[in-house]
Picture 1 (tube, rainbow, N blue to C red):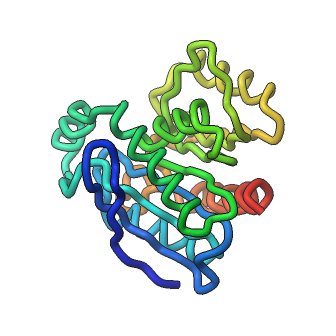
Picture 2 (picture 1 turned 30 degrees about the vertical axis):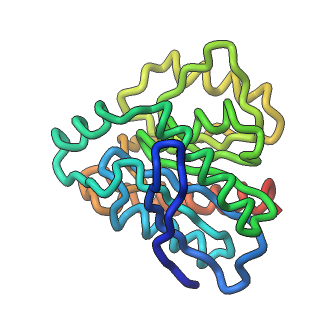
Length: 219
């Protein structure tokens, strides 16, 4: 496994990204890894490295252009100031960058804010062949996922049950999709840097499901 920082040429100018690749790269499946509201931090880079260890190239764009937060209030301010349309454009650039670099197929995954952006890619970019949002908000607005989606939510998160029911029903009409609900799990149950939220068993189960899903749909 190798990792490096690369530059994406986006419509808003150069954007930094973290790239982790398996030894076999530059050919093979790849995944765009989308940050939480904290920014492109060690947790997100760690997820990219874990994917590379499993044979996937992983590219994590820096949607905050070098800024990170460690406190919720600061993270919320960064998220609220994010230009979502530009962020989605940057993520589409990341998909294209991976395909140009030798990816045979590209998927996307993300957590929290990144989970919502993962949904947006699945709903708008037909080049994204599989999507795995973790506890991400979504409004379908008459749109349909263009690729299989594997979604993950905890029962102790703050999402309205009606939204989860809508997601479950939507994915029932998208072949190959999966909906997973984790009993007793709060928001951010995948984030091991957040001890009060982290659920090791659920995180391990969810990661195994993610790997199987990507291997099935990106092979």
